[in-house]
Figure 1: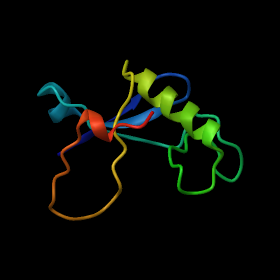
Figure 2: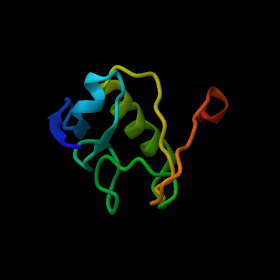
Figure 3: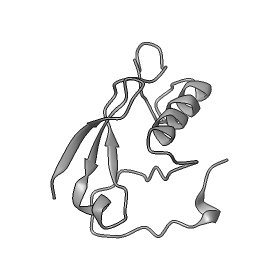
Figure 4: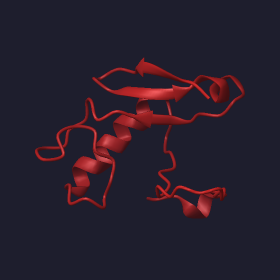
Amino acid sequence: MTFERRDIGDGVVALVAGELERAGFLAAFFERTGGCSAVPFDSLNGSFLVGDRDPDVRENRRLAAAAFGLDRFCVPGLVHGTEVAIVDVVDREG
């Protein structure tokens, strides 16, 4: 699978899986460019688990979603393996 580096506005850059996007699925990985987090997180931090301020993380996630025209998106835990997670409306935050 190949990823396209895409500037999606407001200083936000993402790597997008073009093949999946053409098939109707969005899989994107955001770089840390853009965003509003302060040092030491410096920009588009999307994790609540590293000590960043919750309001900054929420705004960074809002910016990332808006860049693709989404209301919300899923942020799975990063675990290397072969299992597939099924995400439903009950799994959403906020």
